[in-house]
Image (cartoon, rainbow, N blue to C red; front, side):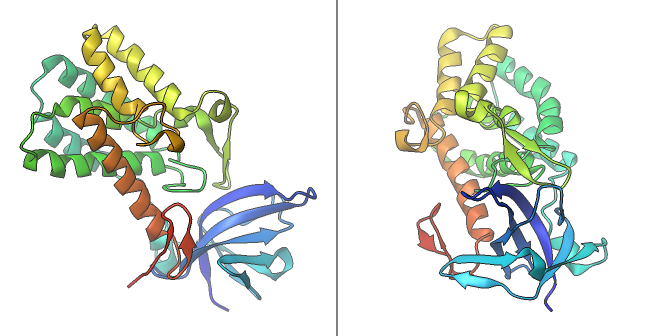
Length: 289
């Protein structure tokens, strides 16, 4: 039987009250997909990082599933196992710092540079333990650090070629804090599964993130107009009202933040979608190879 490694896990309950888990599994870099395994309680394996095999996988269109009795747990993947290297790994701190140091070199506003420098270590420490989503993109422990880093890296490539008076400090701060609220929205369990808290539905990560950044900027006594421009980038980062943003991008900086967020999220979604499967988040069938 083919062996897979569990990349992500989410627990759920059917309309009839039966427990199940949704796994993202991979046998190779190009052979990865999601499937539901029925009748698996939250307290039962597999955990993220464990290997599994299946006697039978049912397919119904793009939906794949298996019965609990058809799943075989094969233990943790050791570091010398090729499957181990398919696990998402958190971006290293030195790589995070190197990218931010490059961006800081472009900055001219000393006060905003100070805020970025003061916040970058604490943000990394928080983000390396949190996912960027429950199921859509970067949905693994540390995914929030990776998603934020990818946006910063994209920003560091885009900014130098723009012949416009974009204020890079606004973009950096907005990227660093755009998903801060996901610290409150999600919980990562011991098996690697991700669940949501009531904060996701009462306030939502965009409001929580904007509120946090607004307060920090006020503590540093940043000018009110400047605060408004920076916080706007966070409020608008989903790009459209129907995607959850309370406002649409109205400045160049906000548009840039939206696009680097969109690129990072959608490329990750496509990376984790099986070839020829349709994914609603990108509204297309994904082709690999």
